[in-house]
Image 1 (cartoon, rainbow, N blue to C red):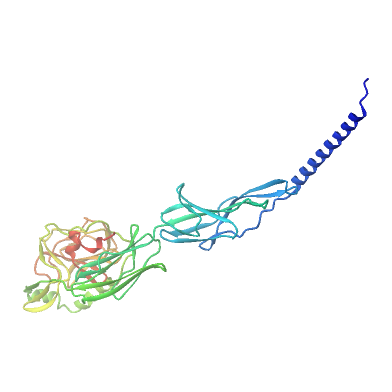
Image 2: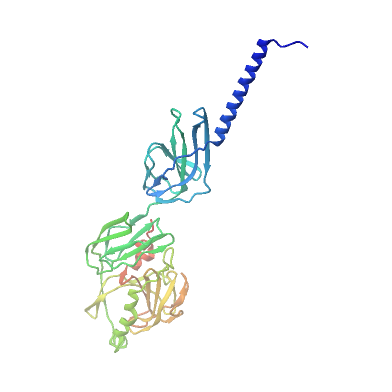
Length: 422
């Protein structure tokens, strides 16, 4: 066997020692790497309009093994708990810990609709989505670095919209006020007689009626949805144009109706309380129909009436020509709140259409419904007649909002402000 020379022997010994040292160092480094903990900084969660966002994920990297190696730790959250509710046009204020680059994004219906590094974000789109913000510490001089992402669910609603159908009208007309895009019942402040807002489908609405002798002038109206949504207008009411009527009434008719003891008190007891009632539910929709066929008007709304040469009263409704026994139809869906004989108006029906809007139908020959009945548009509710204080067969049709009688013709021809929903 050939002997190994002494120099080669020492070379092998040195190489083995070096290899052992290298392996030992690698083992030490591996052990140190495995034992080293990555400890991300404890950050205070960013806030959006004061609401803390939910932690979503992070990756944090530190130098270990005496700065020779990098070690990272990634973390993921289980779910999202933060929810931000806002409206289009709102500005969201983002606050975040200092010392980090801030980048946000908004995704609506899966598409990115906004992104940037701003601390103030204006919302422009209705819908549901997510707001996320990433805080980044850049890699520099072997200092720890990484990123943290926080998130919140976004619910962005349309901003409430308040509209007036008009700000000027004549006596006998109606101004509607509508409010869209809110689940909160709006409030109205005014010296006018105003019923509370009610829901017409998905639109809140109230009706301001101005009867034939409403005092002219200017009336401030303020509508409030919340502390950020309010609108004020001044309603100007001007004189309407009304004609005069001269009629002759026999003493027999007067004595059998107006002059009956207790007739006036009966009227007040039965009719006046109805001015103050209003159903929360809105029963009607679409345009009202004429309560009798023919559509021939005998007496106009609001005219000055003189009986036997003496001024008597203003006419609060519309007298429509008809023959005794002609059918009388419900002008719109509603609830019958009165159906009985009164000395002044004979066989009388009052229908509540919802929100204080009512139809009054007088002088009928007979009634086909009872108080409490629900009626549908076009349903026969009685027959034309000449009962009560009347000179001949006809249908007296009156429409009121609270205690304000409004032009029935406007309601029947579709031009009334009651139809405003824009």
